[in-house]
Image (cartoon, helix red, strand yellow):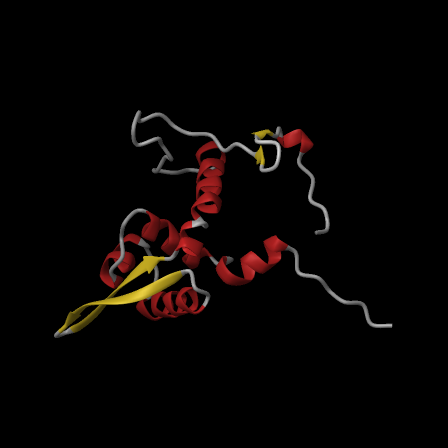
Length: 140
């Protein structure tokens, strides 16, 4: 008897964005950088061919759309879709974890007041805070 292997949501997400470069590109797109050269400069250490590959993957997954902003010479910019903006929660959670446990030079703040923010879970049905101690991962 052959057992069906299920992909959990985390595994499926990591298949799409689970390498170092992809999440850094998403981070920079969330910060308003949209042009290839801006992304290459802000994502320190990425090779141009790797950036091109990751942008194509993100486009294929519906996370970004490519839009032309110049015909001569041809130039494109990359814009997050609503699906791509949804990754902001994951990028923010990783950034918050890094603020506590890794060397860093960025912080996640509320732009209106300038204070750092915290990640909070809420029950979508009850609309109440859910402490981390009550979180469980279960089969859907």
